[in-house]
Length: 58
Image (cartoon, rainbow, N blue to C red; front, side, top):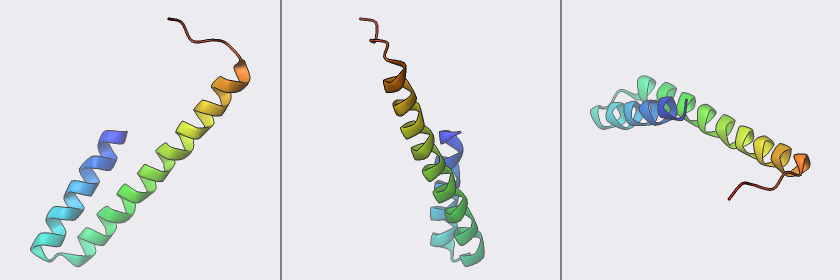
């Protein structure tokens, strides 16, 4: 899914270069939403891993 955020970001950049404001805005919004969703999921995953208390394997 992180790949989708990157794809929408690239679409937003290309659309902005060509002057398609509506498409660029929509793609930027989707990319931002996906990015923050992944940040939240990362934090939840780190907290859950810390609370589980298992040491990582070496």
